[in-house]
Length: 325
Length: 270
Ligand SMILES: Nc1ncnc2c1ncn2[C@@H]1O[C@H](COP(=O)(O)OP(=O)(O)OP(=O)(O)O)[C@@H](O)[C@H]1O
Ligand SMILES: [Mg+2]
Image (cartoon, rainbow over all chains, first blue to last red; front, side, top):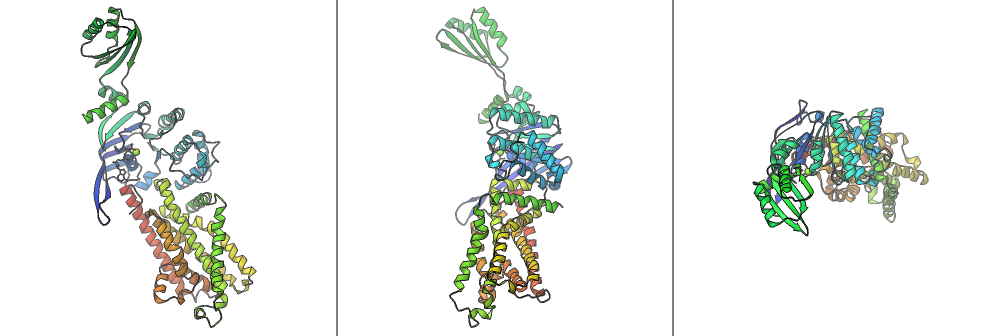
């Protein structure tokens, strides 16, 4: 179990005023964050650009010391016992960096494996297994500079697993990957948690991914926690409106008025398109049953009905709007 | 065991990085050989008999040997300046951060990196030196039984120097300035071409800054003058003092670099 209590990080940045003088400025990247990651659990960390996600991940992986608060990882202190903690955790970030381009995939893994104190047959087995798991066995002796983006990302994953970490931190692991590769990666992450019992923290800008993978989600803004719940609960509590779109036969003005009257409390917009018409309904409850009965009463032929279930994405957008208002 | 494993890992990594194309042989052999040849022929036109001013400080008949040993030592040290330059590459590539993500002993990585780079960087020029000795008929002037000790000393000193530089490069965004300091001035002031004794006082003071100065002096005394350990005891003590100082400063700077990085998220101090 990873437990972060009242976690804070203040960066001090030097700002140049002129050649001789510079001014120190403090950036509160993370403030009073409480967070837990259990074994076998996938936890999401969401927030807009600059919210403090990467900073949090770097503190959890002992690359940064917190300015406030405490992180314990299975009882070990992330600052005092940093070296011990390092063999229990690993971090994977997306992108083209963080690999030796002139080394082959296998050589990259071998190098990092040795830094984790592995050697001999144990290391070689681990390398072969990981390469197979991420589907790079055939490319294992190809220099990384010849890898595609997706291959590099898969090698990142293999590198992040080389020390068989108990906890894994993923900073936007699917950034820039195309759909099938990203899907494959999601399957793998799921299996790491569910079958191997690893605790995983994930940041991502793809909310569908977070919705699919995460058991719990933390939403932070400007370094502070604003919401913590399951993706379903967040969506249900934040997005109160249902969206229904209906395409039907053409409606007369009087029909439109009667429909409006029977759907009190909802907002309806009509638009005419030749001999058909479109209704957009936003309601604080699920209005499908009601609208269908009204249409039957008015003898309106429904050609298409679309109910948009609220998604995590809508929740985030709503939250962002509320902040702006 | 662990140490050996890291050493091998660093050696393979540097080999893979540096021997990417054939140009490497230019910097391993042709360039140092050219340095030697140009120095040799710049001395030629001058009076190199016993009446020359240089003869007060060295055996002028030994000028070929003197320059060869000088450049051999210089290549040992200079190659590690170049290898340390790779640290700034590792920082930009983000692999440095990954090294610090692991529980490996940082000091072991820094010095293994130097050791791993050294062997590859110097074997060609060492071979060239032997070749010149034989071809010019100077092999008889060498005190061969002292050569292993001399080369061992040169290697150990170079590795301590290289580890120190690796750590210094953790701090600097611009490697350029260090190149400027170490290329020509180190060649001149360490006594690669002209004996330090021949310098004016201010020059001797500068010479003391470069660890290569101390090593070269002992190396030449061992290999060219055949002096024994007893005769050189004092020089050895000074050299080990200098190396111990470098090692202690290295350990201190490395701690400071990681602490700073954990504070600011950045290896660069400036
Ligand atoms: N090394 C640093 N020094 C100073 N300020 C920093 C440093 N790293 C990040 N910051 C600042 O801290 C804040 C949080 O940054 P962080 O990288 O954690 O955000 P993020 O949530 O990961 O954003 P993104 O989604 O863009 O990756 C930002 O205001 C950023 O400018
Ligand atoms: Mg980030």
